[in-house]
Image (tube, rainbow, N blue to C red):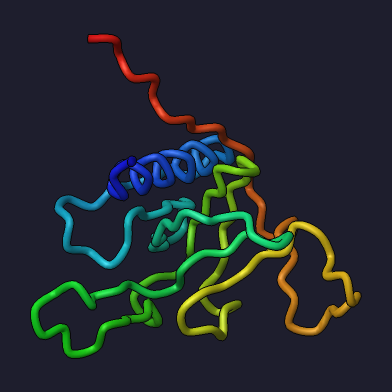
Length: 149
């Protein structure tokens, strides 16, 4: 089984590659204890990005919009949101190779968000976020091939 940190590193790399392809400067914070993974420099301001791995489920890319601290000793609050601490979620979905940049203001959910790849079968449009609106690129970051020993 692959380590979650390796999955997260590939997601961050995919988001960085898509942002660079669009011409943005990308800065990486030093250390592990920041609430964001990247900073976008658009030449007028700096914007904080939290990277998340999306999973394709039922026609939508689903991703967490909070951190889970349930594994910590006395976590206080097991789930912690990002409001006021980031500007965007950078999402990479390995199943579609899509990279999405989602403003945190567009999300009114607490634990998981969804970006629809296909319209819902019931044709609902209210409160439906279509992935195409947020897509900034396509990046394939496959798992490394294990070396023979």
